[in-house]
Image (cartoon, rainbow, N blue to C red; front, side):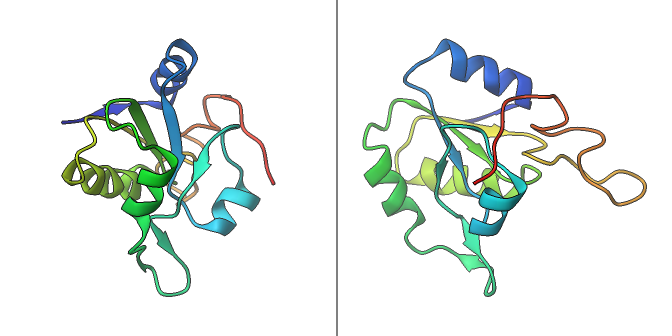
Length: 130
């Protein structure tokens, strides 16, 4: 089963459970230039310019996180790619999957801007740029 947590709940889980792992599934550009939570493992679910699902995603996660019973939190821009990635990991046997709803940048507001009504940065949680 995949659990959905908002960014503050996800941050609390990461602070309380040293076994929990955060996987940033965004593109290299998003991860590096938009920013990312410190300590996040970067494994893109899709990558520009083709935007096809990364055929090595599950294998790369298995290499980085061989234990399938630890909490794996997944983060993207808005919560959709991370949910798709979580579903693929569920099929691969991972048991404790958490999708971070609203992702790093949050949903679009009425002006089609992100970061104003939700997301990791909106809540003032730790982040850095590469």
